[in-house]
Image (cartoon, rainbow, N blue to C red; front, side):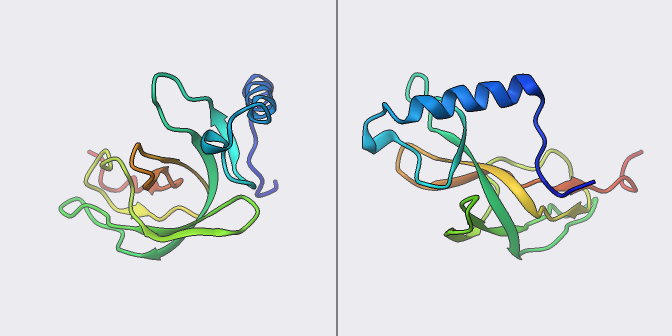
Length: 129
């Protein structure tokens, strides 16, 4: 089994179609080179795109302390976009969390700040009851 990302045929088709639409977009809303696009903007929403993530700080947390991993976020071609990026959304449970590595999802908010939506973090099973 390889380390590559696998999509269903339906998802891959949607991504390919959305990617084809990028060529006709004005430069100010076009994703940067090397970013895989997963969704087109609607009603002011930011682009959601595939990134590479690598843990660069933080801790795994526990059932009493929230994990605090931060990441170096890069384009899929390896160009570093930003370091020390925390998750944009709260983690869903207080549990030990294995930091993500590989691919994630990110977006730019309305102020142009890079936000990490998913880093492929995994929650430990020992904290569930």
